[in-house]
Length: 106
Picture 1 (tube, rainbow, N blue to C red):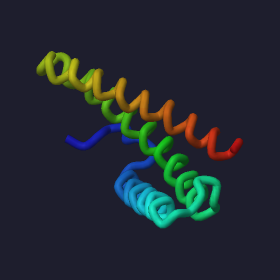
Picture 2 (cartoon, helix red, strand yellow):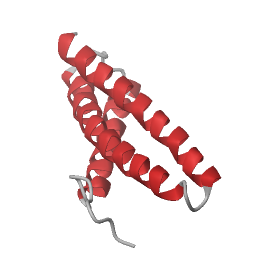
Picture 3 (cartoon, helix red, strand yellow):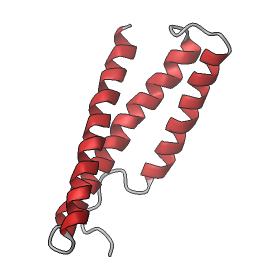
């Protein structure tokens, strides 16, 4: 059943996730080739990935939160599992936000 009120990212969720994947790949590869963590080749892709991860985590947490409430009357265990999943996504959101702040300040 399609969502009556889909989150803002909609289908862009997947495309933004791919950008996060490639940005992380570039930053890690630059580190592996001996670049300093303060180098622009490391910081810029890491900042892009972390900023997009904040958006993606917020969107995913909203989706999972809604699905948890939908599943509770049907299958309580699945609903409760989705609440745990939403909490993990919330933690990811907080850590990603802290990483964005750290990359901007340092």
